[in-house]
Length: 468
Image (tube, rainbow, N blue to C red; front, side, top):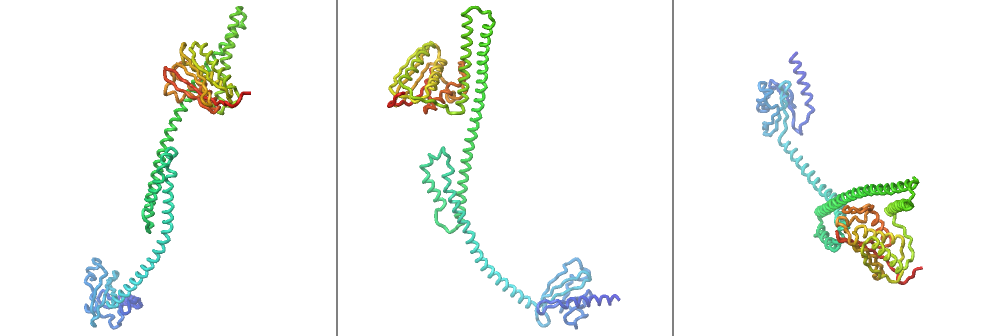
């Protein structure tokens, strides 16, 4: 039964490989573990012993060495007819049978030559196709590259228009033409068909352009940071001055109101019979009320001027008469304040188109400051002189002067010189400046510490017109 089972299995294997093909003349052979041929195209050789002359079973396939060596071996043999064959031995591990594939070497060489021809043919065809496809794709790719290069060049040429700020554009204007020429030479030094090279040059130019933009951005950023710090400092200073103003204002108003209440209670008590004392109390009430009125007017004016351009009620004023009035006012004010007065009024004929009330307020403020910031016995100089078609008003004192660090702030609202104890709210020069600027002029000054200050402004005079 064991031999019968082996025979059935061998027949099954033999029938299975009959349909296998190996080239034109190649074939398969199965040899069992007893070195007998189980399957062969030549039925006469079946059940015969395989000899080294036809099939030389490798010693490595012996049962003793099985599992310890390779189970696939290739050999070349010559047949009885002198034909060189290629024999491939494969060990079937399950039962130590050997499967042999036999193929004449000439047929293998024929297949190899055919395969080589096919590979060469396909390679040539593929190369030609690749050349055509590469050329086509290159042409298509070069179109956007050329376009990109053009746009990058345009962006680089536009560098001078956007990389310069207002602060340095005037200085660079003279060099613009030379710089544009230099950039064009860098971008297109020679005509070339190499789009990639041109693109690389354009990208380098664009990189330089972007670097300059970044540097310019850093510069502007530093300026913004600096300006922000200065603005923050200004806000802090303004806030401090505002707090000081409110404190002084509260004190002055409270003082005036307290005096009014005190004088009023003294009169209302009925205990004061002396007429002179009553008149002094009434005068004290009136003076304190005037102080409150003055403070209130200054506050209302400053609040309005801080938000709006002063509204002028202009009229035609005789220049000679107006200047004479201001000159006499200044003279009397200086003398009444125990100051020495010097001055000159040289106004010609003509008309001033001004708001006389506001100019009077400016003039009185300048005179008041000249007296306020100087000592008794000092000299006050006033000059009203006509220069061409302008009438200039000038006030000079010998007072404490303005420190250099305060000169940029004297026109600011609520600003007061911290180096003196003179009473004030820091509104006078702020209002005066706004009034003069509303007339289309400017308020100027020069000053030296402990030597005095000089303030002046000019108004247009119409010599060909007469006041109504």
